[in-house]
Length: 146
Image 1 (cartoon, rainbow, N blue to C red):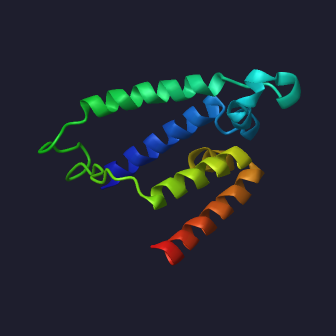
Image 2 (tube, rainbow, N blue to C red):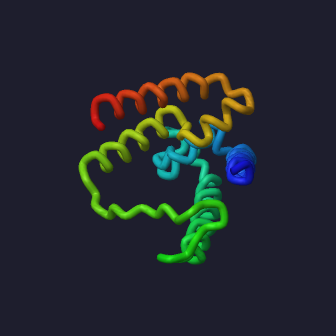
Image 3 (tube, one colour):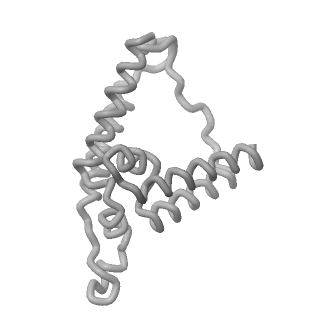
């Protein structure tokens, strides 16, 4: 049991370190990446920052590799009784609405949940407000839409 918690702690620490090193915990850098209008007219809209595309590309490569080596039915993971892979494949209104809310929140605040938690741990005070709003939104979703 303790090995599972240590593995989770190590994975979380590695993820947080990667977010900090890549700049994903800097809202200005994220908003600069999302500012695609800056590609067309930097003088009017500000400069577009493409650096996070490389972070996302690296993450995508690792994810594709992980999916390729993830065993299929009948295999057992190292630290769990079974793999818990998603089974739903449909796209419904709740999924689309959630994706839109995530994107709007990410664009406005420059944070998504992982980088916000890492920012709180590294002293980002504005991330505390984001985490509080995130917790309130999660509570409201469970309370009113579950």
